[in-house]
Image (cartoon, rainbow, N blue to C red; front, side):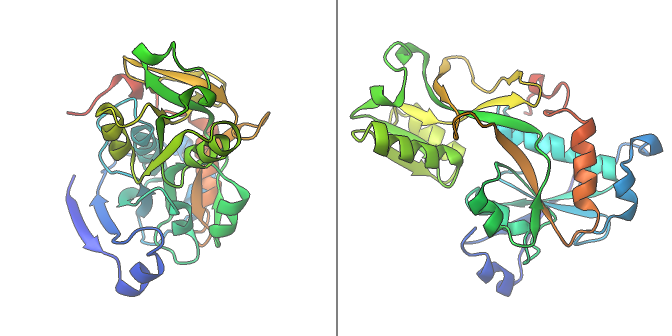
Amino acid sequence: GELTVEQLPPPLEARLRMVASSLLVYKWWFPLRGAVPARFVPAAASCLSTLEEGVLRVAVEAAHVPDPLDPRRWMLRYTEALGSRLGLRVRWVEVPFDGSWALAGEEGAVDLVATNVAPSPQRRAEAVGAAFSDPFMYERRALRVREADAGRYATICDFGGERVGAVRGMNAEIDLRRRVQTHAPAVSVVATDTFPELYELFHRGGLAAVAQAEYYAIDGSVIPSSPPGIVLVDHHDLVPGQREECAFVVRGASRGLLEAVNEFIATTAFPVAGELGKRDG
């Protein structure tokens, strides 16, 4: 599809400076592959209104993710399937994760945030004018280490004197800092803005571990997300005994969209069937 770039209007960009210092809107059109059978169109789709007629504006961390083990790619494919189901073309808006949930709020930058957000009281309060969808997957906190080092590390307490990284603003960072403060004050926490930056540092030997979740389908099955040579240790819940569920953030003024998104989630398993075996060039 065609890929173009446009700047957001200056007043809106200024108001969203806390989310992204320079926010670019990537238009990536996904034409429908033939008509969608009526029986597969959610009832709520017939009364939808979005920021732009016929278009679903979606905030994502990246508009092109080739790695099939990367959760950001799962979000792209799942959201494309949502757009097709609703008869809408998808326009990606690339943003940093931190603060992305606020983009579907009163300012109206996007109709939908698909950055794999886990709702929390603070995030709900910051997403004024938006609502969180039903969950489509859940996570458990974990640390990713090199397979050769797996025998050395079992919990955060084993990383004394080491550097452990996380993406800024994610629950992984919040959880890591809290546990380091409580259980392992000799651990140094390193935060980056993106996963590519984080893993570049890890592969250069600058980190002993990466704080990133293990991902689960709603039915409890593990969604593979670690490449060969990487293992996960120190599994735990962000809040003991509670599922850390992930959802879309939906613009409240996009009439009928929340209902349509929830109907889609109820009838479409995450990730999209067959997606984990594919890789973009």
